[in-house]
Length: 127
Image (tube, rainbow, N blue to C red; front, top):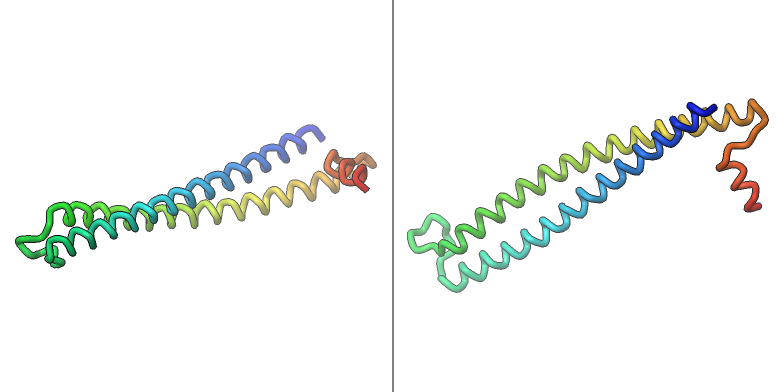
């Protein structure tokens, strides 16, 4: 019985950790998108100011060129983060399944022994 409670706590911790990871990665993606938009606006401003929008042109603004390179690098980072987010979401789904399975086993054990799990006792106390 004690090992089941430990197993439940472990699965809950892992599930919450995956949720935190997904939220952190999602926040980073949103932050990078804001930075990307800022750099894009900076590139357009510099191109408008100099009148040259072709990066291969000899008179293209160095500021626009460096902002364009940073912007492109951010887009690659965003793509990598999206891949990581997909991996974490998949791991989260698997961990949630494991948690549900462990909770069902714990409920089955509690019903078999006649005792109530703390979750069930709290739910009955609310009724």
